[in-house]
Image (cartoon, rainbow, N blue to C red; front, side, top):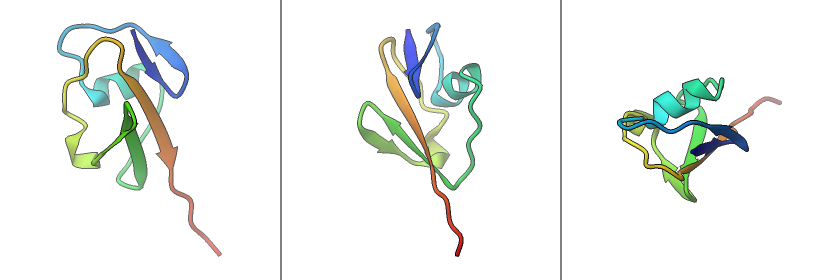
Length: 65
């Protein structure tokens, strides 16, 4: 099982961060902070494989004035 922003999704062998985010119905871009088990993941590292039990948090950066 993988948890993405408190949504539980089924883990499968070879799953990447991008796969998990997509399975959870989340969308990201380069302005999104991704945390994997309390470590920040760069946007260009979303093809990194995850393991069963991984916890991902998606934090959106908002700007404006």
